[in-house]
Length: 461
Image 1 (cartoon, helix red, strand yellow):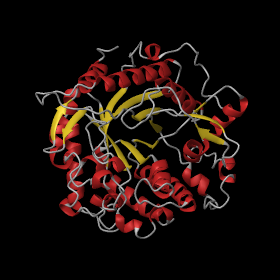
Image 2 (image 1 turned 120 degrees about the vertical axis):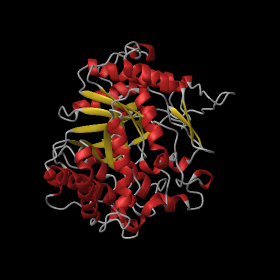
Image 3 (image 1 turned 180 degrees about the vertical axis):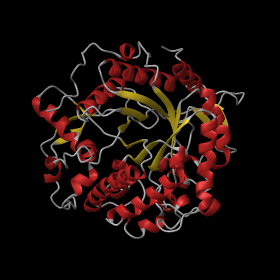
Image 4 (image 1 turned 45 degrees about the vertical axis):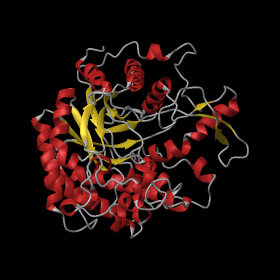
């Protein structure tokens, strides 16, 4: 039964959670971005279109018809960004590789120009004493592969394995911290079930085929890395969800447990060798997972850590008319510019739940942050964002409390380093601790940048 309320007293408050920002001396501090959101240079140096380039040009798909053609222009301004990261004092930068920049045809011939950019970025990071934390896939699938079925085609397991092998061979001596996939939930569910993300398909059977093939691709990438003998760390990044029950009534507690089946157990359990949640699949018999003999073993290869992306916690109640017997209900917390409730206590609950269900695997918070309606001051040289600072302070407090409770949390990456293309919201939402002026790509560190610098330095302990 649901255990997400364990250890939380009714009197705990945001101030309690934020009372200590003391972390272990070897705690890894970082920031994070994704290739399509920040790189720009969409047609530079042999890069081919991704599914997001196509989706951006689908009428009504992205706010105001915005595209990732320029992003935050990190492709051209990476040296400036690395300089800011050095000023920030972080130990790691999490970024993703653009598959269509490296293999424009999805498979086959490697594009040397694509690798040249990543070599320049990696060299700059090493020179600044910053550890690269590299994600193989953060949603920008080459369009040529989507034309062949994308994640609904089991052949993509081999395509992804080939891509991973090329990356490890070329960059492996400069990277020792790898993540196979970012948020496969979003790739499969938002991309193939709800259609809110690229490629914009609405078909549950295709979505669940994509779920399974993403898992298999993850396993293939882990196998390919182990075969290199390079000896670094490799894991996966998940945006799991553990909603809380609206009341303590047994039916609401069970509803909250069921609400974790699709966004959490469908993505965590196979990786941990437990298979898919049968209770969830039974609610949708027309959309079976295309399982074959041996798939569970291929998916559940040994990994070194799990990346946790957390932004909010939702509330659910029992609903006898729903296929899964639950529904989301209103809650009291203030919200971010995304409309997401701000629930630092939920973050603490979430980290504890994950720790209890991952057999002691090390955890890293690979994304945490908030969108706020930021504006430059009258001088154009400062951006005051007190609400983001409050959000970060309370959520970092939840991390410190989780560590004190025994959660094996080893690092934290704030999302995001810089304002960028926010998927279907285009450039209308700002998550960065660095302000990006989208007219000229000028960078302005926000107050939250300096707050996070103080956290990293220990001044906020």
